[in-house]
Amino acid sequence: MQLSASNISQDAAATVREMIVTGRLADGDRINEVHLAAQLDVSRTPLREGLWRLASEGVITTVPRKGFFVAPLTLSEFEQLYDIRPILDPEALRLAGIPSPAALDRLEKLNRKFVAAKKPSEAIEIDNAWHMALLAGCPNRVLVDMIAQIIGRTRRYEHALFRETENIWSASDEHALILAALRDGDLKRACAMLKRNMQSGKAPIVEWLTRRTNATDGPD
Image (cartoon, rainbow, N blue to C red):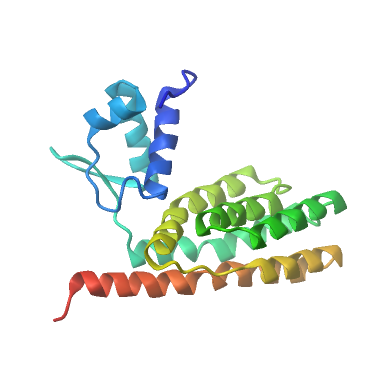
């Protein structure tokens, strides 16, 4: 796997992040820098810079004299991350305003693609793409970047859930309601529907994480 030369440490961080999201580096795994550097065909210095970048994002943790580890999946972290989206996304949509008819057409096309997704991993990626496209017109790019970062951190929870349980839920109907409100010119209603959409995806993951934690802890 050859990384581009433009910014090796950034490319390394992106690659490792994707390995964590998709489960190739599992929850709690120790990251072997020697093996990983060879696998990515990079030297250890830019790889280590990339790992420190991921540590600053909370994706991996560091243990003195032991190295880097994939941050564990925890109910506490997930709830804190997920509870931010119902606040940030509606505000970003409010600032963005009503999308153009062409943009709404693209969102409807993307939602149809979401409905037709055959694999949970595909559905997750399309759903995230739909939300980022919805907020593309937001003039506050710091806000949009914050949302993108949170998506990156919650995505591994969604992937892990589907890998372990085959569970999937569809938010396509809620997407359609948001788009209908926007076509009616009702931005306030669209923001309210978006907040509800953000909240509805939480319960299945919380239930799974609770079961997972209880299974790990075992009986008293």
